[in-house]
Image 1 (tube, helix red, strand yellow):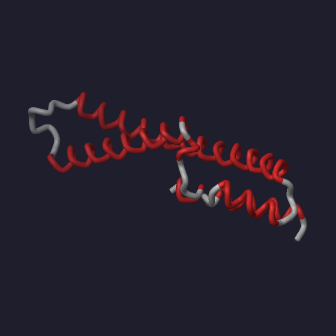
Image 2: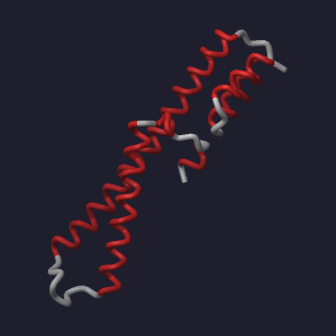
Image 3: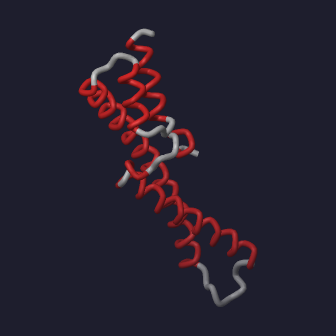
Length: 125
């Protein structure tokens, strides 16, 4: 197998959430020295963390918008009056809760991308 193909497979393994130890073993069994494997893993890890941070930023933007919209709605309406329906208020509240969850999730991805063990595609959903 060509070294470029081996590196592509190793990158894919790390992107898909396999452990660094498994990727290191894969590289060393295919002819890479330990130091070469460490260098490649460091590059793949940096690439993975950058992708997770990008996802985190997207989630922060979406979460902030939804949360802010829910807060703005409840701040501008009189909660004690019947100016809005209970169903509408519940819908807005759910949107705000979902936005808060996305916001917190995004902050975690941005600040601590190494804590995530899922594959990149699972994270981006």
